[in-house]
Image 1: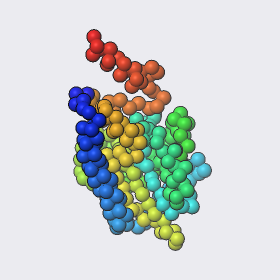
Image 2 (image 1 turned 90 degrees about the horizontal axis):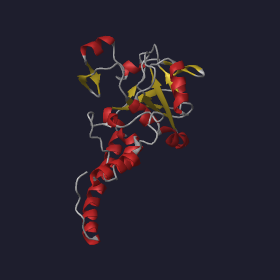
Image 3 (image 1 turned 135 degrees about the horizontal axis):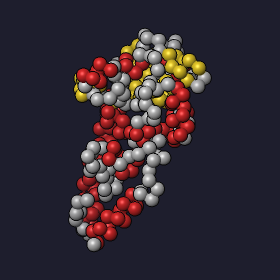
Image 4 (image 1 turned 30 degrees about the vertical axis):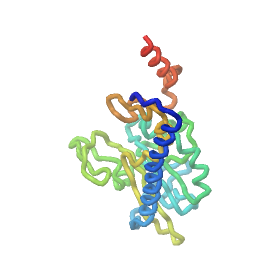
Length: 253
């Protein structure tokens, strides 16, 4: 941690109010970007996609579940994977709480992976999640929305992701795609985001961002891989409180 200045209450208040100006500017910019996002053009989805679900085969239209808006979370879990991605699992730990409200606001949330449905259901049960999660195994869906890559692309190490050709060393990456269905049943792709576009959905980060240590990702990855684990893999007793106490003991020694 940096050594912050220790000041009087009046000095703290002045500094806090100066910082508040930037926080308000960020809030206004976020509102502006959100409004701009809603004016983006749409693309009509012409291809028919089929998904394996616990209720049988379902089309993209059927995934809307009677609502007009659909958020697809592209969860990294390929056909040969035995468990889901750690980062995707971190994000999906935040979904069920929000989803009970999304369903009341004309929004359906569904996770999609290329893993076979049996693997998905097993991992979902292990994690204790309730949100819908379906398989696109055998479908072009993940490839068309640029979150899955062919063996040739993985071998080459280059593929189209996050709107540019970049390095990829894995067959699956994460993302979010949004769709709208009109009264006539036409489906439109309205938005997709990838990579750090997932940050707004990581509620734990927003708690960390207001703490003195912040995200504290100072390890080799300088990202969530430095500390995040699947929630059933954290070592008992090795939480942040224990680490903080250990650090204080070391500094006192």
